[in-house]
Amino acid sequence: MNKIDQRWVWVFLGIFTILVRVILGNFPQIIEQYYSRGIYIGIRTIIDYTIALSPIPLIYLLIFGILCFILFRIFRKKNKQQRIKQRLTNFIFSLVAFLFGIVFLFLTLWGFNYARVPIENQIGIEPNPLSKEELFQELEISTTELINAFAKVKDYDYKVYEEFVFKNSIEDKIRIETIKTFKELGYPTPGRIRARYLYPKGTLLRISTAGFYLPLTGECHVDPGLHPLQIPFVLAHEFSHGYGIGDEGSCNFIGYLTCKNSSNPVIRYSGLLSYWRSVASQYRRFDPDHYKEFRSTIPQGIIDHLREINAQMDKYPDLFPAVRDATYHAYLQTQGIEEGLKNYSRVILLVNAYRKKVELEEG
Ligand SMILES: [Zn+2]
Image 1 (cartoon, rainbow, N blue to C red):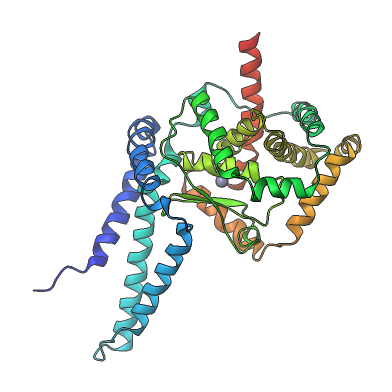
Image 2 (image 1 turned 120 degrees about the vertical axis):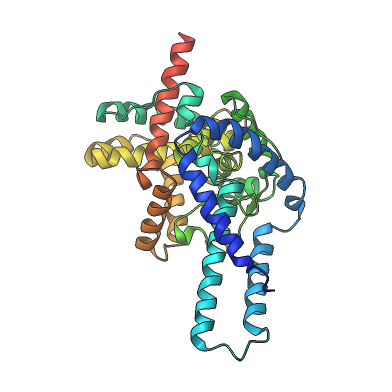
């Protein structure tokens, strides 16, 4: 009797999970209650207290495993009787099964979080599009915050920042700070997520990414080629993904709050600097001349940091900018995020709405 081809199992699981995702996409409350605050807590706990205890980043082991598997398939004894056409069909079927398998694992291990209740509903804020004047106000407020934070770090040089992010237990520090923010916003923080530097430097930056969360291993990754002043914020952003937030703008928002509320001056400055860069780049699009004029009023030390960051980014230029934009845009759209890449500026609306809420509460 022929045994059932295992590959069908992956195809079935993939299709089934996609269907469930499409249907449940209309019921964020159900995803929130049973997946994000239910199943996902179990997944987190299991991953973090088993495989993630590995001293080696799991992604390296995963890549090694996949390479071994491919080599094994290439060199194993071939069935000589199969014709080229049969072999090709076989190969394509394997590939399709593999892709469905990835989709199944991606969604069940994390991806359903994309369809949970949006953060604005969770914390009761109303993000609305900003007028040019409101955006400028946001720029002024974020500049004041940035200048205050800069005052605490102005005597540090590059070496201090570098040691801070590479020689200290920055991973634990930022995890603790992120957990605090999640608790304040009313979210659970199960497990103990790992965040790893992904070497060689620049690997991610060359595909215009600073970091990412990999559901297959349950670990966060950050590119160590970033300027050290960017790293604390990027870590907080990635941890937010790890704790079950899919949306990019929401992770930037949580990263901003986490850094801003930190008692550590470098972490604080890192987050405020990153947020400032988002607001400034938006405003520059609206009114480049006025932006230039405004920028000239900012302390030279901050301008130097902005230049250093740009210079650091230039070290790792994009390999395929057009391909990257198109694929990532498509990726976000398949996750039900209509705005695609524009989603990144959502952080400004969230921060703005949150500040209004806090001001109201404080009277
Ligand atoms: Zn992200």
